[in-house]
Image (tube, rainbow, N blue to C red):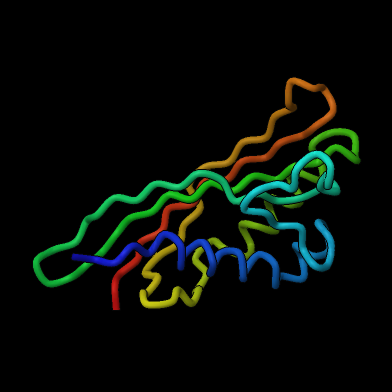
Length: 141
């Protein structure tokens, strides 16, 4: 039975994002990349990135344990007018992750590929929200 690569994959993505100079230039150093945004009494400083929902589908064979993951990342900004900063953050995320070679503990990352992007304004009328989805193929080592 294959081991679950979702947490090691998330750790690898987090390490890549927080270590990228282009991302640090946009969301601070240390980079504001969250698995869970701090509660309102410790409000997060905009702009920032959140690691969103993911899915895992087993696609292995009799001899290989392989899983396909989709990972959603979110960029948030409320400090600038318009989508510009959110789009810059999304571009930096893509430059960091698309076809990257990441070290995933206990696994081999075969592929990380940008699949989908979207920007929109939240219902509060103040917050710009960018969404990216990545497809990842991971093999147990």
